[in-house]
Length: 90
Image (tube, helix red, strand yellow):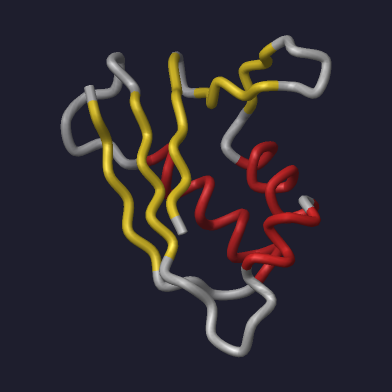
C-alpha cells in the first residue's frame, strides 16, 4: 500500500470533503486515515500489506524524516504495527 503525501512548514497538505485543503499536523491525517472505511477494508486481511509513505516536501532538510515518523507513530498507535518504508522527495 502506498500513501502519497505533500507537506510544507511541518504540516501535511490534506484534501477535505468540501474540496478545500487543510494543513494538518502529522497526527491528524493518521487519525483520518485510520478512521477511513476504505483503509480499514484494505488492511483487514490476515496479513497486512507493507506500507510505503512517500512525501513531497521541498522545505525539509535532507535526512529529516520527522514528519513521516510522527505520522507513522500515530498510525501505529491507532492501528497496530506496520512493515513500513518512507521516502522524501524535494
